[in-house]
Image (cartoon, rainbow, N blue to C red; front, side, top):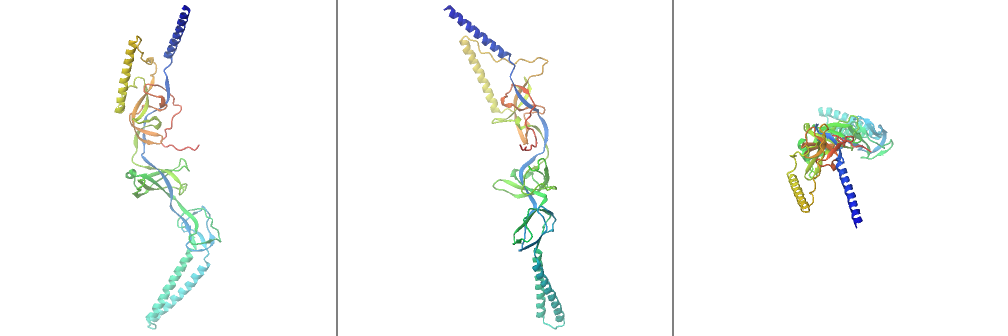
Length: 419
């Protein structure tokens, strides 16, 4: 029996020694810390803009066709040519029409001669007024017939109605065209229109001549500038959007009708905002927050932006924790045990050591966004060190290790990158 007791005493002693050693190891372990990246909050100038998606449209663009039927006698252009206004493009066979015009011109000359002679004879009272009227009517008809036939001959020549670039055509000499058959498209490319829609709330900030910038994924990094040239006088009742037309400079003729482009309209004067990356802000049901990196001891400062409802919840939680601690102490006292010890405070740094940096969560009021950035209206001051990544494991008072080797996106005008 004594041997058994001795064995039990030895086992208990060994276990007690192991537990004590383990507790000492925990106490000697370094304070845990969370790796984060940071950025110093600073003011930047923002140019307010309205963004939209637009569609490029030619200032003038048509598909040429013919009013009259005929056989193609000559094609004076190639697909993709740049042409000037009035330049001949297609000539239809007009031999018979020209011959008919010559015949009508001969009839006109005869009618003019007869009318002139009848006028002289009427002056001498040699013929009646009715005969003179008949000859003058014949002259007018002859002139009209010549004009009509001359118009028919002119229609056999298809010319460029304005300067521009021709499209792709499959027209060939000897081909027969019917009225309305498509010949080739022509587009005026400089300047060029872009149409886009903006919400009706932007209407008050729109005016003719307002500066516009457009970018297309076809030409990364190239901005096409222009100005608003027209605003639709009615709002779309289904979308509550207003249609806007801007005229862009396109000297290199890179923009083509039908292309998609992102549009930015400059509105108002520049504004100065305290700017941080959007990744720094945590959006919560009770408000937006950011984590600051501060020296230990200042993380407990009162945050005036904390919502009243959350303050009340925190107060009740603190009172509940205090009551539970008191109850645990009373139970331990009744059972003759020691009350649970409070968690040891982190060791104070040496007087000559740098301050220990910890996280502090503060509530902020956010303003407009711009690319990867967001404006902070209240809650953060210029020069504050803001956590930009690694917030998931943070809470107020946690020691942080700053590592800025990799930073989240913080571009005011981000561009998509093709993988």
